[in-house]
Image (cartoon, rainbow, N blue to C red):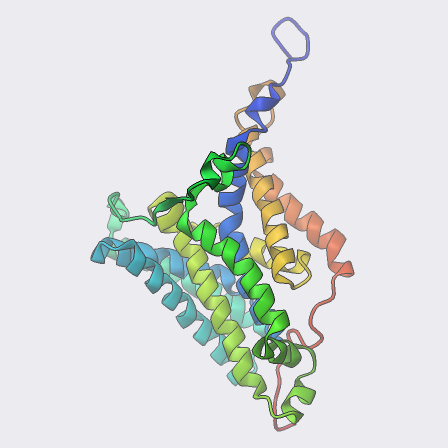
Length: 320
């Protein structure tokens, strides 16, 4: 209400503007990268709840290597490799030893949170990560940037945003149009039949988890040296779990996972913009809750309508 007792008007241009879509795309990028990785993992039959830990590790290693070697490209490469290293640990427990995938995933997340927090304090202390850490560059697409409407949103973005947009159709083509993609989906649907046909089920499950680790590490690098140029304790802030929800929301398909990540990104951008709308007198804490509330609502309303791979989460023992 305004000081004279009337209802204050809302300037919608403060909420819906080009910056909203730019922020939405930026927020969606790490979610989409991790969700794409999770799709590869779960299409082979491995529930990867460890993406949060893989992202967090990638975020820290990206800053560490980028600041030490003065190269954001090497930081990105190290982040991908660190995500794959955590994926190997996860795959070793779940595929080799057939441990409960959710339990091992949570253990990886706890390990990553503790390890990165310890290393941050041991290496950088109270001063935090170096402010001059090289960051991944923004790229301007000639021609696209000058198109009214979409130009300001798509024409000038961080290089990993374009990598993510490229990976969506590539991932879809790989999973649904190539022989290797068909085999990976087969081991997630009917591992016994795939084994009978001569396909090494566990090897392909390792591959699916490794791809998930690589993309999750890339997602972490985008957060640390693509957006914030720093690392803070638990800076992924649950994005790995939201990416998992996006993957389910997208029905375990790359395009669906991207669209779901875009929806969550838009919710996050709306939450960010709504904080500045004083006319609504909306609590900041309530506004920041929107993306997480959307995650719960999406899973509660959609999960029964989606169809996971038939053998998702079920360990496979070739000797039985």
